[in-house]
Image (cartoon, rainbow, N blue to C red; front, side, top):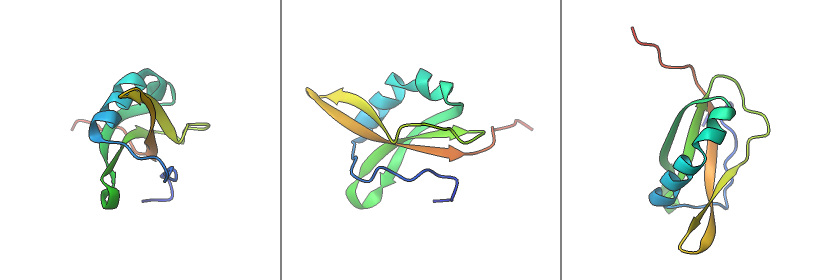
Length: 91
């Protein structure tokens, strides 16, 4: 991870399904933070934990470390990673 990647909330773990649920539920909020791309990926291979990754032009201030969703009647905290990255430009 680069210095421009925010530290993960290491206690939070989520399945791929829960991470996709969080991505869909919180998409507008992430866009309001400046996210130009939002994806789900494996973030802790040792424990098979997925998270939401938001790519931004500028560092997002006051972004949460996790996104909450409800899965099987319980609240799950899905890790959120904010990465600074340039927007894709078609050539």
